[in-house]
Amino acid sequence: MHDTTERLLSFRPAREFIALDAPNVFPTQSSFEWFVRKHRARLVESGQLIVRTGSAGNLVGPDIERVVLEILREESAKESKAARRRAA
Image 1 (cartoon, rainbow, N blue to C red):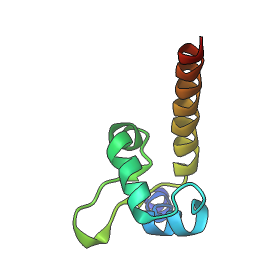
Image 2: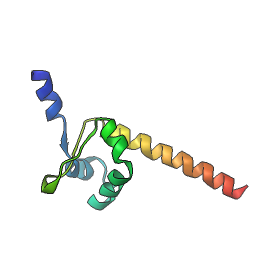
Image 3: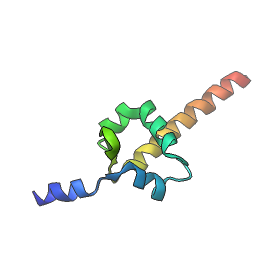
């Protein structure tokens, strides 16, 4: 049971993550909310997003940065590939 408590305690409000760890990537709460809407399934499947309703807001896990970076890198690679095709 102690292990479960430690894992639960590792989750924190998404607002805290945005303010402390990702202000350059998500300058506003709305920008993170848009990202979550676009990638909700992947974020939830990764175990790094717990969706909550109401004013409590979502919770994010300790590896959320890794998952966000993976998604952003994949999107960047796709956009780069598409731009090369358009230029050709």
